[in-house]
Amino acid sequence: MGCQFSSVDDDRDMAIVGRSSHNSFSAPLKKDRYRSISGHTTREKKYQPEKNNDNEPPELDKNGHLIPNEVEKRIVRMLSSKINQIGNVTIRHAASSQRGFYPEDVHKPNQDSYSIDNKFAGACDDSFFAVYDGHGDDGHTCARFAKKKLPMLMTKYMRQLRISEAQNLARNKGEKFVWKPDDWPDLNKQQCEEISKRAHLKCNEEIHDSDGVLDAFSGTTSCSALFHSGRIMISNVGDSRAILGKKVEGSAIPQAPSTPLPLRAIPLSRDQTPIRRDELERVKECGARVMTFDQLTGDSPIDEDWVEENDQGENINLEGTMPRLWFKDAQNPGTAFTRSIGDSRGEKIGVIAEPECISVEITKDDRILVIASDGVFEFLTNQEVIDICAKFDDPCHACEDILAASYKKWLQYENRTDDITVIVIYLDKKE
Image (cartoon, rainbow, N blue to C red):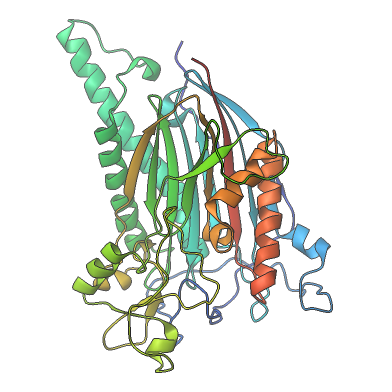
């Protein structure tokens, strides 16, 4: 018999330490991905924040950093890794998320979220993984909305198309249609990418219409991986990221000492920020002013001499001078990204929810897939993240080490830390 529809949410089999509360908005620091100089917040829709259950301030050390026990309270992790069989590919996956620390808003909630859905859309051989990174006053609400709604829409559109094709196939054979998702025709690359774009745009439309979400100056990224028909389809909106660790025989790439085999980090997404020339020109055509905070306030000359992407699609920037999007006649919204789910005001200057999709066939040399928020990639390179994963056999351990390495880097360069969320998937394809 075929598998019945099942959706495995990340809230199951989790160790949740500590709680994040929803407090009032406090203006973020200079490197925040979302900034409005005026501090303007629009309350156009009715929304009752969750009750604050975290009234006690966290304990800090002499340097103003969280003590280890306080850090631990902010981590949500899977209790154990999960194993799935997807066709002839065995995957082992785990996920962890660590709430950030903002000295001026110590109760700021974790605005990251993620979803893991196995037996996706009713098919045993399909899975869906995604990371959402919220921003703005109600970014946490936007991320949770997308976490719930986007997989539902993807499921709906995939099942509709597969059912239609299965019915046509049965009709042409003179047979009766049978409700057996595993036997329905697989979708091709183009069909999956069209479904993803439709689902993201519909999710964006519904977040605008939701009475429970304040998305005028808030929104969320979405970076997802759909396993279907022997492929991985990455759909990306914003600046969360997906990377593949691929085995390369005789690679001269520097590796961690304990790395058992050479793995090259292959980017499967590109950050959608105004550093990208194509995105820069697109939002400027929509009427956006693009400049850094210092340029906006007159402290730096007006030019577009910003950090460029390297060949890994990275723009590691230790100076904190990221360009942002502004209205021509107002000092907001100040977004450091060009695509987002939500951000209804930002849409007027080119912030869109259409994902960039890339599909790859899974090969025996593909060993690790990582999907993570920019809390990981702000200071760690793609290769460093893959090197960490390659040191471990258990994806749970890889997640923990990525959190620790990311957190350490944040403290090295900042007096605060961003939310840090990562999904690690180990791949083993049998020929």
